[in-house]
Length: 161
Image 1 (cartoon, helix red, strand yellow):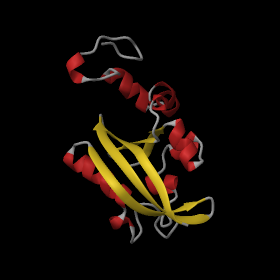
Image 2: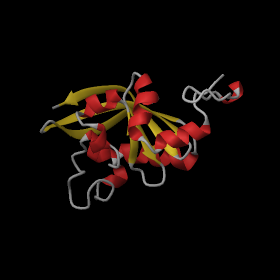
Image 3: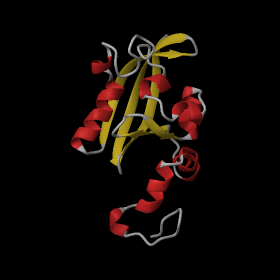
Image 4: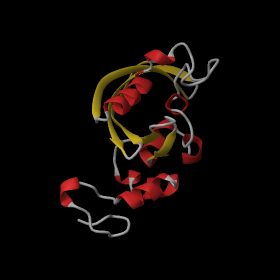
């Protein structure tokens, strides 16, 4: 098996598509990461830096899902990107009285803490979508990789608006 970016030989037992050198370079270039890797995935994907919990990458399906360009997503926190109704309160995303109960924040923290991939079903969140408050449920999976957490939205349904 070869790296899909540079062609370097990879060990089949590792199950990687990209060598570590290329992956490190991609994390420094969100547009290249999006085009070369993330856009190949059908479901909406966010890539979060595990140290800062800020978004370092997203695919086109995620950008369409949230209605924002890549430049507005990279460097932001998850609540600001998906439209959490608490993200614009005093302190902002990650610092309000509601954040300790945030399922998005908690799943990223659990993935980092356990250093394991996770699957979360029926995540219930209230969001601001195009000026309307909606209640939605998500099925999400996470994977930790080289200092990042990949968040994949597997299913999404609006249950109240």
